[in-house]
Image (tube, rainbow, N blue to C red):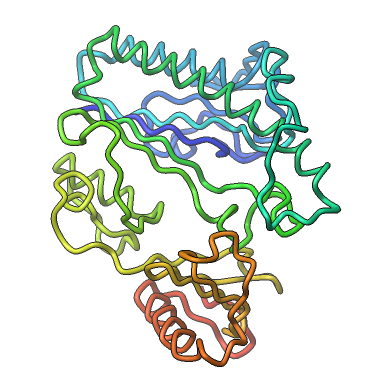
Length: 328
């Protein structure tokens, strides 16, 4: 079995941490790392030798070239390939052939984008979608090479991201917000041996669930103490009990820290003092415009979800001291 994970909006190595020493390689045999700077043209890369490499042009194109080279050289044996594209992260500066692909005036904005932010939101979306289209092209190249090398049937291909983007929703930009535009991310899988094409399911999955799930699928041992859940049966066999909820948090150890639980269609957000700040029913309010946090008729839902969130925190060892600081 082969496993290829594609992640957009993710950086490979943080600025200042580039090194060819084994400790920096995170166990990878094949290693190409760059200085994260949110600039995606004419980047600086490092490989096994501690010498900079300066490829020209759009960084995801170069990264995809590296991935294709890796696939050609490892076609005869099992592999794990992790390809991390930076875009559509800011700056929203697509390659020339995609820069004018989308007319900002043609975007239909969601109702949670304030009227006075509409022009800015449309401009941002044009750049964002241009970058997405450029990544679509890179993904198409990878799918084509898997077909050419006859690896398609035996490769689990996963496309996901580390975060979304507000893109003007609620008058906000960027990431690390508890709203759906930021917290909800894509998760697409292709594995012809076990997944039916174009099938969908409503499982509540967190990115921490991916590691134990894929280890189980590969027949490998799942390390003790992982926070994620093994959802191999639910995803690939359509069996087992569906996850009841997902839990996530952001802006850690700041005054703006938030924690969130989604159970079914209900979503609760609390601050670093465990005070409820947001409550939504995503089934009838998918744009999160009707905050029910102070609604008396929804007190029971609030209490249940807050208790459920506290249960998540206990299970994963996420605790707070009386000052509101997170215990390590």
